[in-house]
Image (cartoon, rainbow, N blue to C red; front, side, top):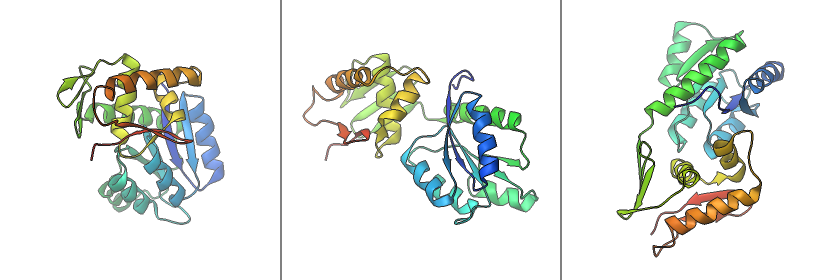
Length: 231
């Protein structure tokens, strides 16, 4: 469950720089880390290559209609992100079109930023509750509820951080997870130094790969890590 005291990672796709600046400033002051895209193409790229707790999407974008952006993200993202549409289009038909393309919520501009924060927290919390509690990925099985993992039916001995790392990588598969995102997701605004992450990755490799013939945990040069299934 999402705790309102934890940092949310949010993607804002909005072409109006004035509105974007106001939203980013307000969300950042309420324990949110905000990535920003001023057009649909960049928004889709970011959404498909990173994991976000919530995506805020303007419908009136300069290059791609927001409905198309929503559909692209929902159909292609490896982890289903909640999408909250922000728009001046306030007719029932507009809202219906948005929900039919996969939007999870809708706010009409001008937006009350206090309500926006509450909506983001609620969407992130609801999305966490609706996620499957068991992840099956090839020979790997993760039980989120009991925080246990098995590979080829054999139990893995993992630390709490190791299980969080493995869960992030499994949820993102086949996409890699950047080191910066791992640090944010696990340690929030108080990350340790990079050597601590390397130490946790080493321990995870010992548990996940050492007893088996094929290493699943791969390093992606200058980016982070990903899981690779045995051929």
